[in-house]
Length: 487
Image (cartoon, rainbow, N blue to C red; front, side, top):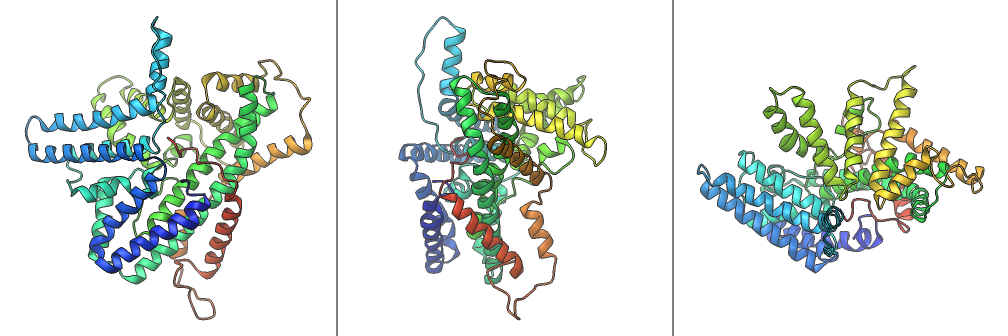
């Protein structure tokens, strides 16, 4: 069930809010977490009961192992228990996400012929497996503590962040549950609801209006590439539009996730912060999928860089390993090599090349457009063959690459200008959290002496949010699935 679908916005979401409200009204704050877990189970069950069973099994297994770790803490087996929990989640991810790719690689590299399992990837498995691994590692480092099974299940299951993040740390979510149990004043709840609506409106607009409009340009070009021939202008349009589509699609989902959390009274971390606006590739990477990169920094890059501190170029090697593991998580076939090398090149360039108004700006923009386009095409292309066909056509290699027979200035020329316009929007974007933080610093404003109680922002911003939401709803009727929806 997509957040940008009418089924979710006008059926599931209102019903879920009512269920949680009734539960807390009848049983008090102690029923808040059980109610959240119940509506989240219903949300995931709408996709697949079999995949729900897998998710609940992994939750139970991880929690039981965390309890065993607590019982053995200080003993020699405590670390082995954590390792077992990590392997359980990695194994599930390996079978359901990478099973077909691993068998295909085995068949290619050996004289044997094994049958691909053909398993349908469970929704959100890349995220909830990683979130549980992060919990186990934090537990082992005394960064969190074991809670009851219901609290732990709600931490993993909470539906706004279940399918595609943000990846939340157990300690943070536990603190949110404790805050709600302690009692939240009505003024604070209304304040959070107002912020939540603004986040949801911004996210829906980014997804349904901007990202899906770009999808209508890129999907036909991908289809053409899959069919065999793609002209150079189509390849360039695909390269220029794909990173912007991915960005606004995922940033839109993440904004909606944060907003939905606030509507239910839970603060989730922001996952994007105007990644294209920053003037440095390395810094921009940190502003993109923030919680994932924090996970990689804390659990991969940080420990590796400390271990390799005395090795020549140890820091660079640690960064390379972290990037390639990130690539493997993002791309479930051999294309991850190109994706990872491209991102690593991005980061290295970020150490030398910075964006600033003036002579060097165009060089930065050109490198950014080309490198981000290559990485994005590798990510969205259904196969390495199709990705290679697009990239080769972009440099004039391939049958039909220089064909202009189908080019139309009114259609294709305007579409390229539209893509560049979206890029300009991304370069000047002000993130949702920045808008809210700036507005909250102003005096509380009123409209004819009355301030709408459901909006933390002033009446003008409330109207702006309403326009964004209604525009997003209008476009959501033809909304494509989120790129990270089944991931």
